[in-house]
Length: 128
Image (cartoon, rainbow, N blue to C red; front, side, top):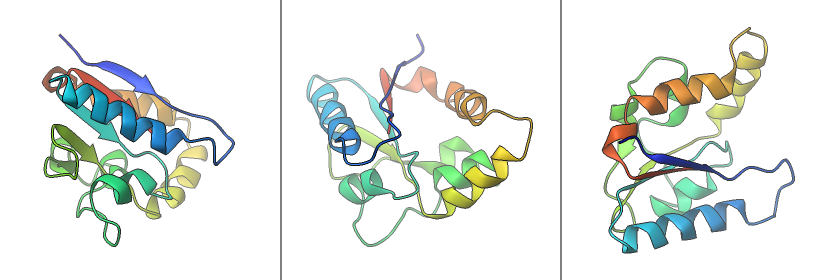
């Protein structure tokens, strides 16, 4: 059965989207669910919280969305939260976002298409 997908989004910054995303991921993992947390914010605060404050993973969501890497290659299993896997972000995502705005493709459809490839491996996928 494919994962349930939870997306926390708001145009306004500073409304605890990242904090809430990480806390929800942690709560589901503590209940024994397999959780994938996807950082879709170029500021990469989720990545910093659950992976590493100084460095982004080698493969990030930006490389997945532009087709250079597979989504499986972007999944980081060793995070600071047991049971939570991560697809990290980087500031380079902002450049890709601008490029996608110039195409007829929907970034939402692209994310959905990529997540479908791993949805059966998780109980919950949380998008921040």
